Amino acid sequence: MNRKIKPSKDNDDSDPDQVPEEYLAAARAIARCVDLFCNVEKLLRVGFLLQQEQAAENGELDELEAERESRKKRLATL
Image (cartoon, rainbow, N blue to C red; front, side, top):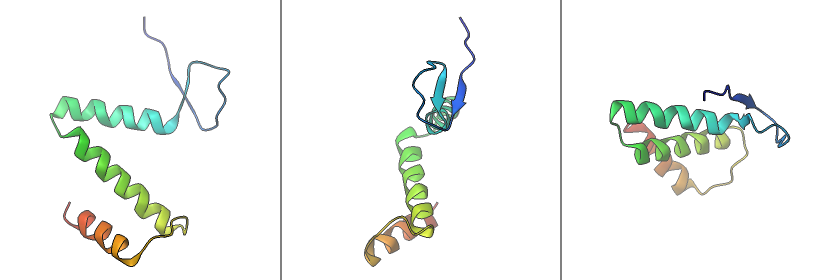
């Protein structure tokens, strides 16, 4: 059985075929990693660092200078 999953940007739980866009993006990334034999844990950590970076740039994240420098250093080594 092959059902078409529809992305959902809101939290409407009335349609079981709608999945939040973040879940679809994570599922695609994990599926590609399994196909390419990459480290899924590392992918998730990098994704989290990128989310933090974006939140910091948007002013949505309060952090210490040391935390920011650490994140930037880890992202720079990729």
